Length: 278
Image (cartoon, rainbow, N blue to C red; front, side, top):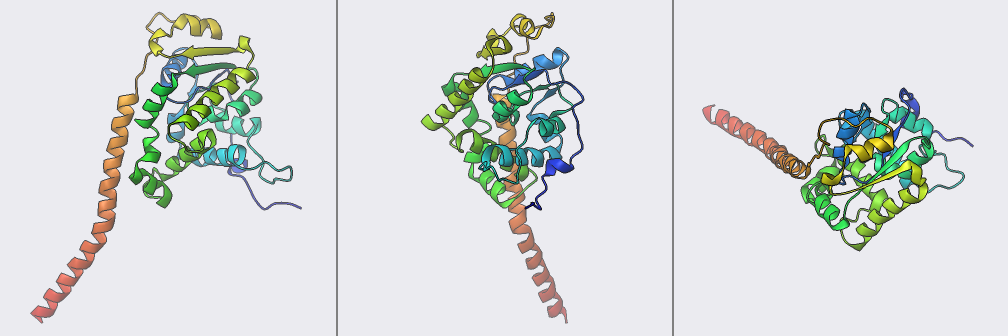
């Protein structure tokens, strides 16, 4: 018995061009932007969420990866193979380092696919992390207008919001705060520390102000740069961006709802006016 189903990744051209060297598997908002910046300064080509957003075709591939690898039940007779190294090589072949989501939720799969890669786990106090998430990324799911846009497919952001919604469904069942979210966050970190040998794992705990080139470069076998270690803080910037997008959606929906009515009203006025002239 065969299946007519064809995965998107199967018709995607791509191959590993750079060896995978570094997996940063801490969840987003744990200093991953600082680490991504630091890795670039050290010469790595780093995949982040921005990499996904810059190539819209990747959004659908990561959506498929989540659906088939993390969310779909895995019966032995399944015709929907999960993503493994072959598929991740297609997605990440141009990069030798990964940070941030969506990669972080595939921690177990990436560790298995690239056992030779160094693993960095960025950790943040849970209460601080939850607050940061509720002020940034989780707004995409807790603000009703964003939810409406995601469900109805309104605006070009809908595919991205759907993919991220699936990412957090896999991570914590779409629970945005409280004990269950904390349990999922801590389980994610614990799994990585269990799966990775200590000699291949570097744990970096916030605050980022305590991070140094010396610790990172000793772990990676790199020479420490002379400039200051990057300490990026995107919380406020991301919040402002989300608020700008929200107001953009308000204007879009307003025009979507009022413009047709205005056109109809104008046509009626024109028709009645013409009729009166006759």
